[in-house]
Length: 480
Image (cartoon, rainbow, N blue to C red):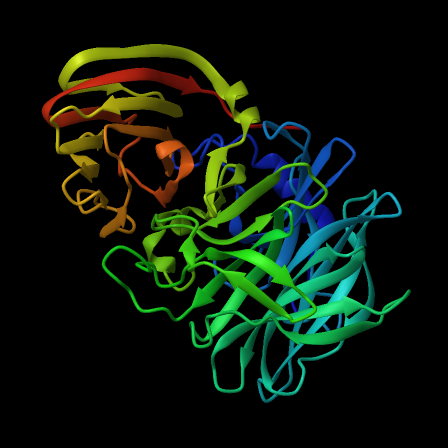
């Protein structure tokens, strides 16, 4: 088990801020060194949002899983991230895996998976509570679920609490012995540290990947829930499941009497190259989501590793339901980042070129008229990425093959637009997030331009269209 010197690690983070490398993002949470991944422990106490996320402060590989912690009141100004939870004993010596946050006795608490392997590489996955103390570290409690139940493998992780009929429960991702994924539900048994296994949450997906990671039951209204989870092992299709692993949801009615959901089809939350393991804040009046901008088992696609860090978190997104489907929109607080703006207003556009700032938001509306093809190109000198909408197929194609570094390839997915196409495009130094049709579809991905150059946005169409909107210069997150 590695040694973790919190004081030295925290000092190194503080000294690494503000960022100065041209690949470091301005309005996406990331670290000056190490590898970050799943957002964890998302909760709100009073007027403060608490954000934990997995972090390896000792390197840019998926080892030494710790949790970092930061907090914010407005999603713009943050406390300096610090080492908060790290392996210390036999239970979590091989990693503090994912978990959730809660508020109890006016304190921020967490519930997480402890990962431990014996000399024969046999894994034990246990679940444990902890409390965030004033000095920034999580004080660990006793183990509440010591091992995986019979019939399931040790791929048993990522507990997420929810309240049902006034009683606390948690959902956790598992793998059956036949190597298919599902989710189990536990219920708190009276007071103390006892939790009863209720069993599997029955869904229409009996054989849907070999493992379900990072589940969360998110309530919308009138007992309408979404089970958000990240299934591993789905086969790629033409317009969906195009990443090595997916992240999405099923939405419908939940009954813990029958232990089932009556739900619609599995829908991905994000169709980009780089999105996984999302989590929603607890104790908020809105369902606010953060995701990991990255992808497991694709480490060679992220050249920032050569500079000492990898990955980011997404911007916060507010989730709402529209006709049984989740709509994702950037949190309103992010509008505070807006600085100067340029108006876009052309009634017969075929080509528009606009130089972007280091951080930008392009909020555009296209009245399609007779146009069948709308293209947005991010051009970085002799490199480019194309975002194309084809009305004849109602499909978007994101094409990164014009980049020289990092992940490339294409993604295709459906976006339904009859007379109007709305696009909200956020371009950070390397992190890109696009919201189509007011958040009906979202795509997140990284671009790593080889030169320190600000992109030009080129809009082109195959027939004149009416384009309106604004392009904003965006500021940066602040850490103090």
